[in-house]
Image 1: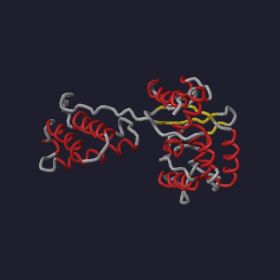
Image 2: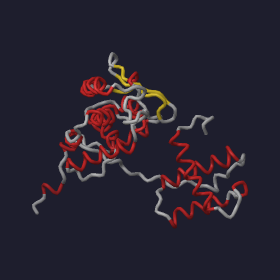
Image 3: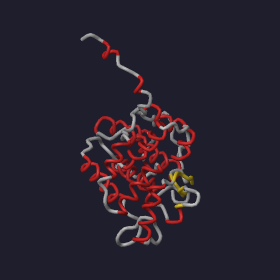
Image 4: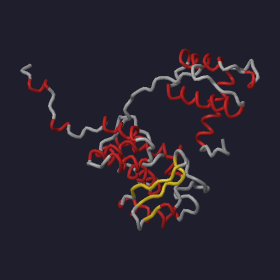
Length: 267
């Protein structure tokens, strides 16, 4: 997987999901597992665990990779049928809720990291992989290197975020990574997640909010402000426009001109 330049996150995910599959087949040597056992394992996931369809799909990818790339065995597509995709809409925050959350964050480093995730539509791994040289203040953009799918892209650099970053740089003088831990190296994902959760709680917001919610909110707010979907697709780094089109189902833009029939009933 390293030779094929899979990301560290993908390697970690495939390793853990494959380990569960091998544990399920612990009565056999790994190279003696028949393809039919894949089908039995998938049925086990559906009937006896509360794991999501997304996990099931990930397990299929990991097992298929193992059979084909490691064992050199082809797997009949009929043996491993993928689950139907759940058509769930991601949660988003209003601009007012985002502002309220941000007001709860006082630490300069924390504020810069969270501001960047929202203002540039970054994934959590993307903000943690940033280097000081990726911030291009002259062109008002951020260079995202080796993002999901090993793709580079550029995205927006907010002027408010830039002012904070300049203050942050003078105070912290990061060496290799833009956001570094107390002992050096990249800042931790867990710490970043806790910062946001604490701010959400302090803001009194009851929605389930994750770091990725900020990315979804960024895209939705751009769409509501009239930004063309093609630009949003480019900023987010989506390969397919279909992925970006989900935000057209989330936005409430135009609702202000609509009225429920109930409001005109004499009840």
